[in-house]
Image 1 (spheres, rainbow, N blue to C red):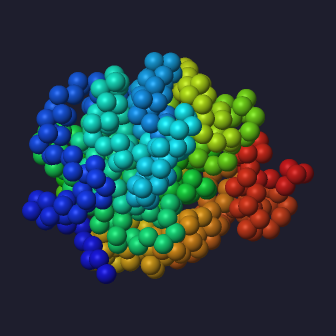
Image 2: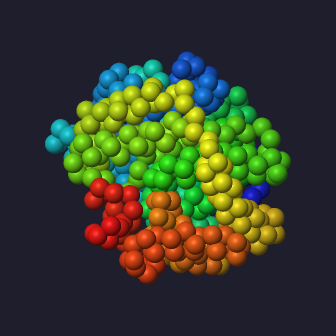
Image 3: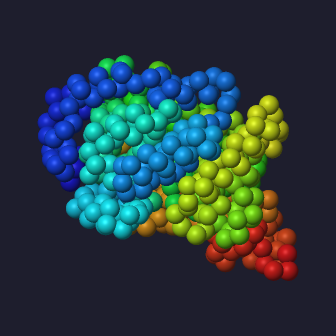
Length: 485
């Protein structure tokens, strides 16, 4: 059993751990920290993720970023260059392939060879570990704006080493958000430990005056996730990162569809994260926010898909999110073309331009913010309590006891008892809290909102509502109403 505590890894211990991590694939031998520090210091300011985020936050600007990744280096450069030049993207990604996410580097190598043979990408992302440090640097040198690593890896130690050395200045994920929604039977103890490594590595760069942005993955399963659940995970992963020396963190949230709730969620997420950081003594961490456009099933019709993208863009602007992760009109059909990716970005940019001077903060938003804060505090405070004030111990105990639960996750290490459903206005509420320690006031509020919908639809509140809601947007609505409604 791995013992996990929220305690900063000493530099000597970390260096011992590095020896094992760098042996994961032969490209690990090319990672040299001093050389990596020197390369980062040589980067122009316009290529540094954290600096661009800070500037956007100061200017009340929302930046746009796509997802994108292919198997070969030259093709990845072509793809990102196209998105940089043709779509007005502010930030760029390198999405990592599925084999690398599972540390299956031999399979990723086969995918590279097949991609060369077939003259097209046979992987669903970029195998950064296999390509190594120099190839990653080729990508960074070829572009004029910052690039982030986006993946889904429970054990990202070697990936972080190689991409940091390669000049990437932002890294997504965390020990909860890249385990429970992604893996079936990977222990939380192991992923928390692996991600303490990633964050300690980030902290080492920070000590050299190199600020690498870290971004916990906000949407989790992307399916009817109540704001309080994703907020709790984001806050916990932020606290774990801050302990290891991370200073620039972007907390994310997946669009749920109700305008009031989504705006309230982004605003409350930043406020709550800062609240818990300060309460726990981390006063020098800069927090920015990320809205992920709709992560559920998409309409197949491109015109309808643009409607979903546009709504996400409206929410990003009105909530004043620092960054929005953009979807494409090909979302329902698989990996998009570069042209479709650019279209989604241009659609988003147009909406952001039109709304940049507008604010939305009425009494409904303020009320919803307070509901989200109360629900989130119930979870996070209980994690601290059962962990005897150690949030790492607390989160492990929380998942075992159901104090923290994630709906529709594949992992056997979450209870999966919580059932979310939409209310009559489309906001996500709690149909069944499972073991989550909400107060009676919160449970009564959620029950009342769901009963209002049930009454309107002339049916009992039930699991069928949940099923209807999961597929609603792909069928053209937000709420899964019976046909006569």
